[in-house]
Image (tube, rainbow, N blue to C red; front, side, top):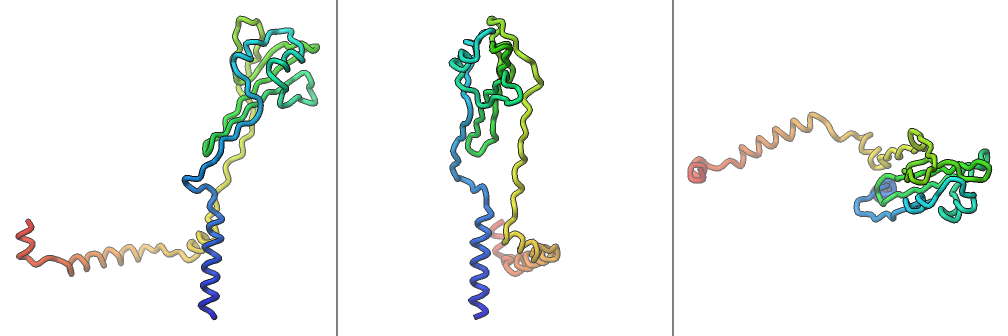
Length: 178
């Protein structure tokens, strides 16, 4: 009965430790694309004095219209390829009296249009650090038991030397090999 209990606990710990593995090698993860896709050609169509409806026609509906500043539109594009880090682009449109006044964000606007571009140091985004991988139940148990001991390393060295002496070739065979 006691052996059955040990067997069940052992199997359960192996199954539960498999649940703690988050990123298995070779597992396919899809590319996640979100937000507004804004190309350089679309931005080149913008000109100062365009109405909100015209900008919406050229670029599409904005992802975010600030409720405190309704004359500010945000076009945000986020792309996370498979197992890589997420990349994000943000374009901000400012309107004055319902007309496009200037554009800011991660892209360059052609200077021939006369559209002002606000220079900022970069978008402010908050990135959450990746989760620390947990060792799982089996890893925690192995750490508690602490099987790695420095005296074992010395014992294995001594055992290897003894084995090498025991399996040494007779002097006659050693001279033939060399």
